[in-house]
Image (cartoon, rainbow, N blue to C red; front, side, top):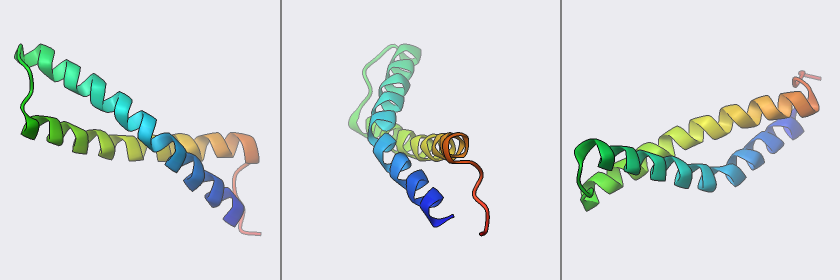
Length: 77
């Protein structure tokens, strides 16, 4: 069971940076299109925080589901 969670957290950590960048870019472009202007530094920082929060949840859920499919559901034994 410990090995399962090790792989979950390792995959989450490895996916976090690229997923954060992708989420941030899509979010910034969507907001720029909606507002019809460039975003200021405060808005960009807010979008980066939002992207990090979304990315950690998405990466963790994906990692758990991926490891369940590859290793099987962890049991207590």
